Length: 140
Ligand SMILES: [Zn+2]
Image (cartoon, rainbow, N blue to C red; front, side):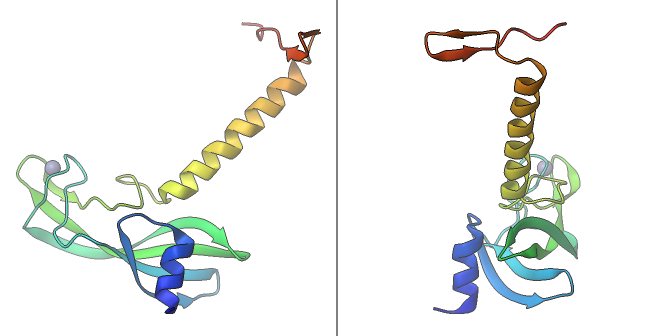
Protein backbone atom coordinates (compact mmCIF):
# COMPACT_ATOMS: atom_id res chain seq x y z
CA UNK A 1 0.00 0.00 0.00
CA UNK A 2 1.35 3.40 -0.94
CA UNK A 3 1.76 6.13 1.67
CA UNK A 4 -0.83 8.36 -0.03
CA UNK A 5 -3.38 5.53 -0.01
CA UNK A 6 -2.66 4.92 3.65
CA UNK A 7 -3.12 8.62 4.44
CA UNK A 8 -6.39 8.71 2.46
CA UNK A 9 -7.68 5.85 4.59
CA UNK A 10 -6.47 7.37 7.86
CA UNK A 11 -7.75 10.89 7.16
CA UNK A 12 -11.13 9.55 5.97
CA UNK A 13 -11.95 12.56 3.83
CA UNK A 14 -14.82 11.87 1.43
CA UNK A 15 -14.45 12.63 -2.29
CA UNK A 16 -10.82 13.58 -1.70
CA UNK A 17 -7.60 12.12 -3.01
CA UNK A 18 -4.22 12.47 -1.32
CA UNK A 19 -1.60 13.58 -3.83
CA UNK A 20 1.38 14.04 -1.51
CA UNK A 21 2.58 14.87 1.96
CA UNK A 22 5.50 16.28 3.87
CA UNK A 23 6.58 16.66 7.46
CA UNK A 24 6.93 20.22 8.71
CA UNK A 25 7.97 21.79 12.01
CA UNK A 26 4.33 21.73 13.13
CA UNK A 27 3.49 18.20 12.03
CA UNK A 28 2.13 16.60 8.91
CA UNK A 29 1.08 18.56 5.81
CA UNK A 30 -1.06 16.51 3.45
CA UNK A 31 -1.62 17.69 -0.12
CA UNK A 32 -5.12 16.81 -1.27
CA UNK A 33 -7.47 17.44 -4.19
CA UNK A 34 -11.16 16.85 -4.81
CA UNK A 35 -11.93 13.74 -6.85
CA UNK A 36 -14.01 15.82 -9.26
CA UNK A 37 -12.23 17.64 -12.07
CA UNK A 38 -14.56 20.58 -12.60
CA UNK A 39 -14.78 22.96 -9.65
CA UNK A 40 -18.10 23.86 -8.07
CA UNK A 41 -19.10 27.29 -6.83
CA UNK A 42 -19.03 27.45 -3.01
CA UNK A 43 -21.82 30.02 -3.07
CA UNK A 44 -24.51 28.15 -4.99
CA UNK A 45 -23.06 24.75 -5.99
CA UNK A 46 -23.12 24.34 -9.80
CA UNK A 47 -20.05 23.35 -11.79
CA UNK A 48 -18.06 26.24 -13.19
CA UNK A 49 -15.88 25.92 -16.26
CA UNK A 50 -14.12 29.27 -15.91
CA UNK A 51 -11.44 29.66 -13.25
CA UNK A 52 -10.35 33.11 -12.15
CA UNK A 53 -7.15 32.26 -10.27
CA UNK A 54 -5.83 29.87 -7.61
CA UNK A 55 -3.83 30.02 -4.42
CA UNK A 56 -2.61 27.62 -1.79
CA UNK A 57 -4.74 27.27 1.33
CA UNK A 58 -4.48 25.11 4.42
CA UNK A 59 -7.15 23.61 6.67
CA UNK A 60 -6.50 22.28 10.16
CA UNK A 61 -7.45 18.63 10.50
CA UNK A 62 -7.61 16.27 13.45
CA UNK A 63 -4.33 15.26 15.02
CA UNK A 64 -2.84 11.96 14.04
CA UNK A 65 -0.23 10.01 16.01
CA UNK A 66 0.49 13.03 18.18
CA UNK A 67 1.11 15.33 15.23
CA UNK A 68 -0.89 18.28 14.03
CA UNK A 69 -2.31 17.56 10.60
CA UNK A 70 -2.87 20.25 8.00
CA UNK A 71 -4.63 19.65 4.70
CA UNK A 72 -3.25 21.74 1.84
CA UNK A 73 -4.78 22.44 -1.56
CA UNK A 74 -4.43 25.05 -4.26
CA UNK A 75 -8.01 26.30 -4.18
CA UNK A 76 -9.41 27.90 -7.31
CA UNK A 77 -11.61 30.92 -7.58
CA UNK A 78 -14.30 30.39 -10.15
CA UNK A 79 -16.44 32.72 -12.20
CA UNK A 80 -19.99 31.72 -11.37
CA UNK A 81 -22.89 33.01 -13.48
CA UNK A 82 -24.93 33.71 -10.33
CA UNK A 83 -22.31 34.67 -7.69
CA UNK A 84 -19.57 36.23 -9.78
CA UNK A 85 -16.07 35.38 -8.59
CA UNK A 86 -16.24 32.85 -5.75
CA UNK A 87 -14.01 30.17 -4.28
CA UNK A 88 -14.56 26.59 -5.30
CA UNK A 89 -16.43 24.16 -3.06
CA UNK A 90 -14.13 21.60 -1.44
CA UNK A 91 -15.50 18.35 -0.03
CA UNK A 92 -13.54 18.44 3.24
CA UNK A 93 -14.58 21.87 4.57
CA UNK A 94 -17.43 24.35 4.65
CA UNK A 95 -17.07 27.39 2.37
CA UNK A 96 -14.80 29.97 3.98
CA UNK A 97 -13.74 27.64 6.80
CA UNK A 98 -10.14 27.11 7.87
CA UNK A 99 -10.93 23.83 9.65
CA UNK A 100 -11.98 20.55 8.10
CA UNK A 101 -15.49 19.22 8.76
CA UNK A 102 -14.07 16.38 10.87
CA UNK A 103 -12.15 18.86 13.03
CA UNK A 104 -15.24 21.05 13.46
CA UNK A 105 -17.35 18.01 14.37
CA UNK A 106 -14.80 16.99 17.00
CA UNK A 107 -14.72 20.49 18.49
CA UNK A 108 -18.53 20.58 18.57
CA UNK A 109 -18.65 17.20 20.31
CA UNK A 110 -16.12 18.30 22.95
CA UNK A 111 -18.04 21.55 23.48
CA UNK A 112 -21.31 19.65 23.93
CA UNK A 113 -19.73 17.24 26.40
CA UNK A 114 -18.22 20.14 28.32
CA UNK A 115 -21.58 21.93 28.38
CA UNK A 116 -23.33 18.83 29.73
CA UNK A 117 -20.63 18.36 32.36
CA UNK A 118 -20.87 22.01 33.47
CA UNK A 119 -24.67 21.90 33.63
CA UNK A 120 -24.56 18.70 35.65
CA UNK A 121 -22.07 20.33 38.02
CA UNK A 122 -23.99 23.62 38.29
CA UNK A 123 -27.37 21.97 38.81
CA UNK A 124 -26.87 18.71 40.68
CA UNK A 125 -29.66 16.15 40.54
CA UNK A 126 -32.42 16.81 43.04
CA UNK A 127 -33.93 13.37 43.31
CA UNK A 128 -33.67 10.00 41.72
CA UNK A 129 -36.58 9.35 39.41
CA UNK A 130 -37.15 5.70 38.52
CA UNK A 131 -33.47 4.88 38.61
CA UNK A 132 -32.53 7.80 36.40
CA UNK A 133 -31.37 11.15 37.66
CA UNK A 134 -33.49 14.20 37.19
CA UNK A 135 -32.01 17.65 36.62
CA UNK A 136 -34.23 20.68 37.20
CA UNK A 137 -34.46 23.40 34.57
CA UNK A 138 -31.76 26.02 34.88
CA UNK A 139 -32.87 29.36 36.34
CA UNK A 140 -33.81 31.86 33.63
ZN1 LIG B 1 -22.34 30.56 -7.49
